[in-house]
Length: 174
Image (cartoon, rainbow, N blue to C red; front, side):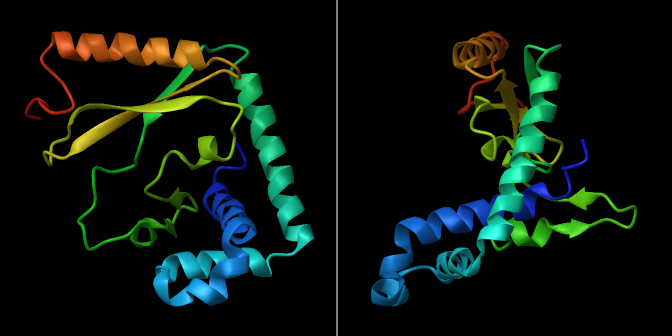
C-alpha cells in the first residue's frame, strides 16, 4: 500500500489539528500547566494551513479505499500492536521514528493507520511475552460496521489464551 510511509506524519498532523481545535483558545492561559509536547502539538495544529489539512484528508481517503478493497476478501486483519516490545521508560516514540537505509519507514506504533480510519473497528489484546520477557499485543482490525465481529474474534482468542493459561496478569514465559 503506497501510503504506509506517510501515515505517522499525517496522523500526527490530524492529531495536532484536533488538539488545536479543542485546546488552542486556552493555550496562552494554561501554557505553563501543559506538558511541553502537548503545547508543541497544539501550536503545530494552529500553524497548519487548509491545503496541508486537505492533503491529509486525501491520504485518508486513499487509505480507506485500499482497506475497503482488502476487506472485500478478508474478515479481519491481525497484526502486532507495536513493532517492538515495550521500550525503556526513558525513551519516547520519537526514538523509533526514522527511515531505514532501504527506504522503509521504521516506527514503533502499528496502530496509526487504523487511528486515521475510524470506519475500521480495532482492538488490541495482550497475547504473551516476547524473548525479552516484555508483553506483546495483537491488534485485530475489522470491516466497516464490523464492531461485533472484532469483539467476537477478540473474545474467542482471549478464551483460547485463557484455556492455555495466558491472561493479562499471568503471561507465560517466552
